[in-house]
Every structure is written in structure tokens, then in C-alpha cells.
Amino acid sequence: MLPSISHWSPVSWDSQADPATMILSRSGLHPLGFEDWLEQCLTHDRIARAHECLLIPSLVLADLDHAIEMALAVQQAGLRVLEFNIGTPYAREAANGAVATETAAERVAMLTRALTDRLEIPVWVKLTGQSNDVPQLARAATEAGAQSAIIAGRLLGMLPDLNTQKPMLGTSGGFGGFWNLPLTCHWLALCRAVIGPEVPLIGLNGITGGHDVARAMLAGASATGLASAVMLRGFNVIVESIETLDTYCHAKGTTAAQLIGRAADARKTFADMPELDAHWQHFVPPQSR
Image 1 (tube, rainbow, N blue to C red):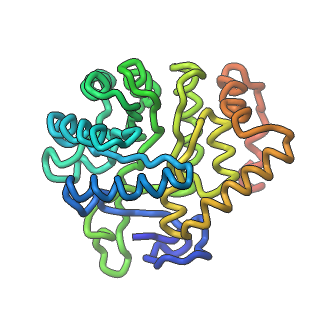
Image 2: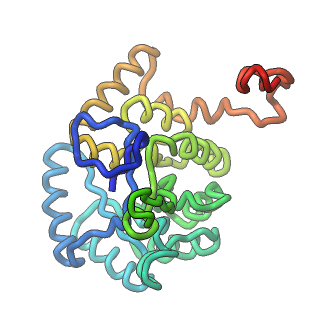
């Protein structure tokens, strides 16, 4: 389901779609069984290697013992990195034990260590945005051996349909879009402050193109994801985003690597900011002043 911000109605794939279109979906689980999925990953990995790219298989946590078993199979198959997704938005809505939304730092540390103690390939841990303390989750994951923390999964939402007067999709779903970029950048900056600039962060949720990639990198991301934009507008979004980022860096006389964390490191607390006693008057109707 791809609700448009203007009309909140379903839209179809369109390479010219408005980047403001948002995704509300019920599940992101792969339809194949594990063995077939792994074989597909190997096929895609061969294509990725031929183009000097990195394929990143992703396991969603349900049962920890099965997760470890599958992770070891991923490593044995020769894949080079593993995303461990413990931050899906769906746990409260899915069948009991189907997926996990981990919001406690102690659990994140335990789950991460369970994989990193058994694997030799790098583990990237995808965390939820449905927490009031994402930086502590990132600290727990990286201190338990994760090479990177992925900040952060979509939020759970529900939208009523005015025609049927029932929920769109019939239930709640994971919700993401351009609007989430400030939240993503906020968490990236705070995670960087907590775990330090040496630990690479991966930013996602709200990134629609090259300028948003730059914004996420300025907030502390070493890499970004823009899956929703590609799903909606096609693979050319990747080419366009790289070209836009390159143009931006050239105009600023810098490299992409040099962007990482600049805005995060310049971020001030409210206590450091100047007082603007009358500034509010610019944002209310004149008769209300």
C-alpha cells in the first residue's frame, strides 16, 4: 500500500511518482523458504561481486536458536556480511513469536552477542525506531560485537479509510516516508555522540534521493538505504542519488567521507541555543499575537 500524502489513496508503481509518497505495508518477510532464499542470495551475490558491490542478506529475528542456525548457514555459503533485523515494527501485530521488535538494551546485547560469538563475518544490527532510547540500543549492539548499527526501522501506524471506514490494509502496518528523515538524522547524531565516530552507522527511513543521503551522512551515517524510493520509482533512483551526492560534494569542495558527522558534531543542546523571545510571532496568524 503506497498512500499519497495529498489524498491518502493507494497508488501504483510509477517512475515519476512524487518522492513525498509514503509506504504503509503489512509485512516485509520474504515469500521463499530459507533454503530457496539462500540460493537466491548466492545468485544475487555473484551478480553483486561482478559489479564490485556487496550483497547483504538479512535475517529477521523470531526464534534465536533458528536465527543462529540460519546465520551459520549464511556464513558457510560464503556470503560476506549479515544484517540481523531485530527492529521490525510488526511484533505487536504479528502472530506470537513470528518477528521481534527489541526495545531493551540488555536484550539487544544478548541477541547480538549470540550471533557475533558464533560468526566470523561482520554482523550489522538493524534497530527499531520505536524506542525512546535508540542510542542505548546502538551502544548495546556495537559493544556486543556488531560492526554497525542500522538506524532505524519503520514505525507502526494505522490509517482509516474514509470510504470503507475500516483500516487501510485491514490492520496496522509499518509506516515510513520522507517525513521520517529528521527523526533518522536525530537518532544518528545521538548514536554517534554515545558510541563515538569510529563505529560506522547506517541510516535509513526517510531518505528519498541524493540530497537526503548527504543529510544522513552529515548526521553521522557512513552509508544509507533508500529501499522505499527504489520500490516506488525504480532502480534509476540509485544512479540519480549517486550523481546528486557527487554534484553536492563537488560544489562544497569535499568528499562523501568528509561529510560524515559534520552536522552531528556541530549539534548544540537547547541550553546552548540563544533565546528568541519574540520568534513565535512569525508562526501564528497576526490577530493571535
